[in-house]
Length: 140
Length: 419
Image (cartoon, rainbow over all chains, first blue to last red; front, side, top):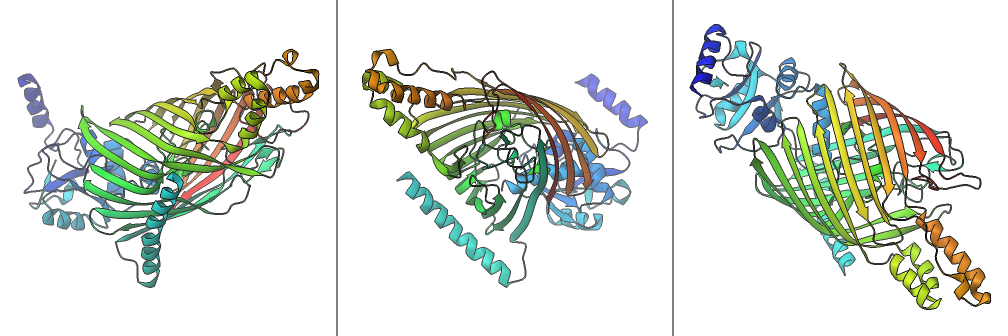
């Protein structure tokens, strides 16, 4: 355990752009600055965004927010957390929607909308271009 | 009684959904409603002109005998309206047009139910809902949702019903870094099926239909176990056993073993899939025991594919195997008066014809899915099927000269869409 955190610290020290185990310079998952959620694994993120779980690991109700279909950040985010293409994600949701089991997360056009939505909902989680991070949200 | 209840439940569900749908047309759509549609346009060619290939045993006609190239086997279209009435309360209505047992495309109500979400992880559905058995049972009509042209019939034909009228509960819980979903349902299903080589259809009735499904998902891995049971009546077969009962105790013994009215049918499924994104491995095994002349059979397949950008080539190996004998000696003619012998021989032949409908076949399939646009795909698939000894497999509309145990090759092309 101690050894692992040492490795993690060393890793962070040599890669200052990394803010979490999965993050890269381009797209980062973000939660409200007021949220207690600190880190999520790619599998945990995938479960939340694919509607497989309804809560964060600490029990808080998770409200995912998507960028619209066709947005490059969206495609990059899903590729990173699920390894799937936009067509595969669409195929996945087709099954959920047309068996009446659920609906995909609400989708908004820009990362400004994502940040606004997250500012209003402490349980909200989205993803934005890392260059657009500000004080209202926290990158995971 | 059960059927009456099912009709009442369906009516009670359809009525508010219809009102909601009508209201939605009068006013500009609000976020309360969701509309969607999906479909498949497909053609399939069979090189076996003396029988029909169909993608489900409840379809009237297919490729081979009726049409060398058939568009009726895989094509379908469906529309769905959903309404989120309150945060907890929602309703879904889906209407589908696909080939029916009488080979018409008259639309039917595929789903119509109301759902109450007690908590984000516990919900109940009342009305006509999907019958959840194997991995693709609930989505077998939504071509865009899976890789193959059609779910392998060697497994999926074992349970021909796609929906059930009743009530179901779903509970989801986190387990071992994954999610476990338990679903239980009780209901009633009935489905039209064609009577081979005739224009007539009949209705099979599955009452006291109970299913229990457990699905575990962790990352790219899915594991699913299912159990179902129902009391099934296949009325077409009954006159045969009434006739056997006329032949004294040996006839009654045969009838009691094979009759098909109100028989307890049990089915089991075990499914596993690993789909990390650019490749997949899927395997499923199912078994159904009809406890009647329809026998007991096992179906399974294993499939794998790899995605190269927008194209995903794949291969499937699938098999249906009977677990019970597909032949029976029938009445012992030597123990009967000579005058009854011709009738007894005719009944024995009819019994063996019916037993031979327990399918035995294995199929190798090669295909590819091409994602041409964000909500359209194109698929091509080649299947080679070897029928089991003395079996006509899942083929129907057999013509004079057809050789059981032969083989056939299919070529299929489909276009799937969702919007």
